[in-house]
Length: 156
Image 1 (tube, rainbow, N blue to C red):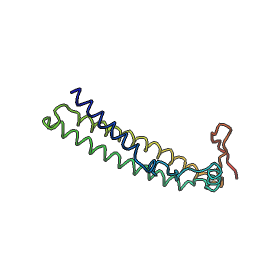
Image 2: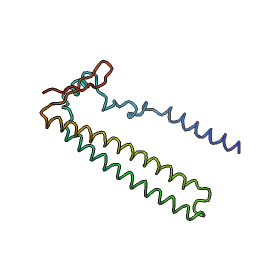
Image 3: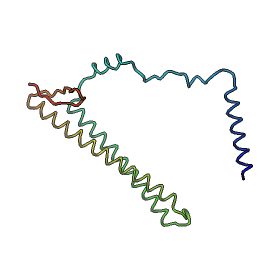
Image 4: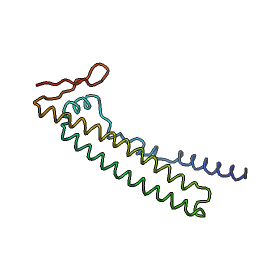
């Protein structure tokens, strides 16, 4: 067994040395610039160009989050059903590793769906608040204090 380990380490080490000694230098993918990186001046100009979210935008985002949460919940139910079917056939998963894996994945889907529901509720309440302010003739604006926290000011 020890001999096999030495042989495998030798083969893998040899492959590593061969890949380093190839001519042509490093692969171009390692040197490619990151396309999504922006300078600070570009970021500032992009932030200045963005318009604030409207109440309708926030309500639409809440619907999208609810739809994503529905999809995650239905996937979690399917995964739990798959795990239950494995429990009914112990010869398919004698040690229960596969079943516990499906249950773990399902629980993460449930958790993600719960977080999306909370996010949707927050967007929905904020969107309704903004729409109510707009209906009353007030225009909500946000100013950031020194710590970066948003303080609400309502102008007329």
